[in-house]
Image 1: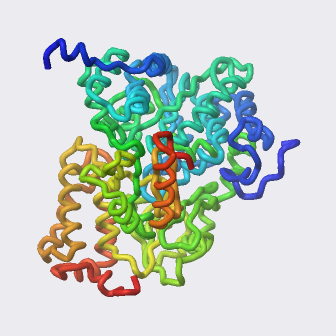
Image 2: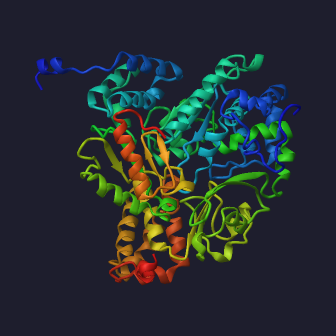
Image 3: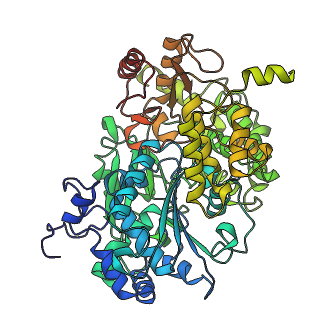
Length: 433
Length: 175
């Protein structure tokens, strides 16, 4: 990369951090931007897919499905094909896609174009959540600039390949982060999930083959194409290749996003990067992956950020969040907030989710206020058993994961709320809270 | 409503808004895809989505008014009634709650004297606490006013921001 600034070793997504003007085409070109796209156009679609497979890149939206494999599901010879970019980031605790859009929008667009070329997609739709209005306007400006520079549209960089890019704003619905609900929303419908199969790769947008990829997933592609899939994979470990942008929030001194190598970094390392537990307090619990995932305790701090290791600990890396809770936190209250969130965001399509989240929420409110009986609390497991694995899409399943894991890990705390008439955790803190 | 009354008061969208609707329709392989962006453009002009405006959108996109109404009612950011000039969302999800979001929302509601719909008496603000995680967990507690986020808030700093926005009048809130 002659002429480009030296970039810090070991970073992919944030390797240009601090470079001036990255949100402009000029600024991004100065650090070597769009050379990945030029390289991709020389390589051809098959070679790009091979590099992505070699990189071991797995989807960064939460499901961690291998990206190259997902691309490989497109049926041969069926056109038009579409790429849908999932910028509907709304998992509680996640704000990495926002950072990637705000700070590196051209890197994302370059990744989108590389993927669109590899898939031979005629259109790429960037579906961005309605609340990210300012970020949507930034992306629209970036796409307009790229059209003028012949990076988007017909005959990209003088090649035979053409692709239209449309930035599409959502309007407030968590469920639209689920890929088939996103496609329904993009078609101008209520955002409700579709039955799978057929998977979007076979029948997606307008019934055509469609790939849905997350913002972070696509932002890795310029690096993978220029440096090679093997170089990307080597940044992490064999089982968990590459790097990830983790979002650390809650009771820490310096919340923020941190790009770290997968597999070689532990939860404790992340906590330290964020300045440790705030106010000199003790660590109580953490939720990795985002609002959907199971709680972990102090005994899990040395677990590496590796898909299998975190699964063995009983949770998941999900969408790359880490919410830290100190010793003053009431786990019943946290559970109630998450349950309320899922109740509000349930799309209403299937009964176990629509009714289950309602029952969960009612119970958790009563428990938090110390008004629930022991029998009521005992019904929590039944309610959740009626939901987990029985809902139409993962929203209803995951609406049970945190609360049930917290109930198991902090059973005494849940039990202490029964008939207490108030929250015993808050009462115990007294004036200190 | 009598026909003459309808005619007398039939409201219309600004010509710029109609042009935008047609431009949006041309962006998509299938016109129906333009529903969400079209509703945004209309809401940007009117502040909410009255049934007559949904009918205009339906007409432009070749849909039934019910198709558009079904979409508009699904998404929480489309308003079916006139909201305050500025829309204030205070995130109550876990990351923000751990850092004082309850106190912030409660304090703002009390200070702004909002009614049961979250609106202030002078029509300046509508305050909403039931929102999705707003994706600014690193800066909790936070609020979003119109399109801008304000992070690491205290009740005092949030009051100052809203005071400034109220004094600036009806324009978009600047960060």
